Length: 399
Image (cartoon, rainbow, N blue to C red; front, side):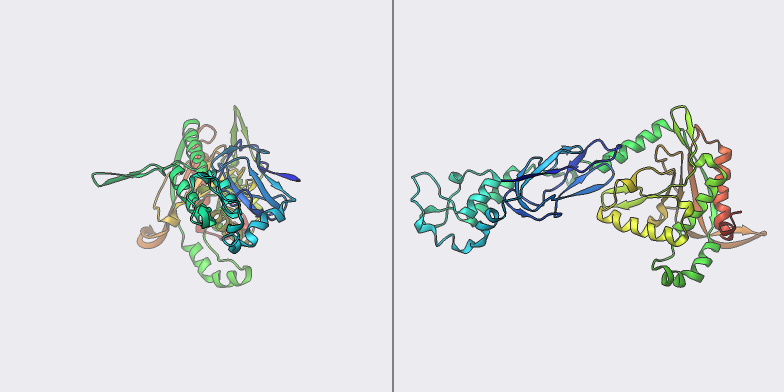
């Protein structure tokens, strides 16, 4: 027998532990190299753990729901066990025919077929406790499967039940590791940062006209749709260059001014909110940004974002407008010191040159840490974003 360990992959320095989700293989089953055996949930991302070698899954060391750290042994693979694992499944139809040749069972004991024995062993069920339907009371594969299902149902922790009290149902479910971490960080942000929010409104007509004029050509040329978030990213970077403290962070009693622009883009996923990072956003074109955002969204839904993509960031953008939000006060993502909230663009009456006109208006919200950012810089930074969006040519000329 040659054993290869299945290990927890190396987690990032900011992740101390993770939780195992559901095993996709059981002991005794054949596995192929690079086949995904289990997923590991951290507070940022779900990691897939592949089989390091082909063979038979000999042992599961850490069960579903276990808490693990980098390098922990999750399971062991017998790399020389292919034939042994394949034999019982090779001729399941013959197990009943072979029954008469089996040694007669002692009274009170149960004889199980090879396939049934394998199933019962995996489930930890005593064959003597199973009533066999085969000839001579032999426990068949079907008997074992039924016993296993009944055992699992009896042993499984009752899912937090839906309680019905006078027609008023309630259900208690545990937080995922990601949700618990998000809650912890947001509470930390509110407790440790002196958060204020400044607001402004932006006339989106110029951006919308530009998009409508070129969206078809843009998609044909770059293979991705032209959205609005890329304009907000460009406008934010322009403002951060003018007011670097918005791109800074606090470290103890020091202020760290970052000479690069890594913009976090808040993305909703089935597991909760994640914030992948656009690295060096100032060096990206509109097309680069749109492609990256589309990719982030798709992989967030599939849980395929890497830890590296979710780590760092100097400034964040949260778009509640995609869900219809009119106005909100976003919470800073520590250790960052500011975050831009953008919202739904709606036609609203505004005054231009003494006349009431209808324009597509978006309300912007900039939350900032007042410990290092004064109201002046926050307001002027948001105005710079507003001016860039209302006159997109400024982004090309960097004025």
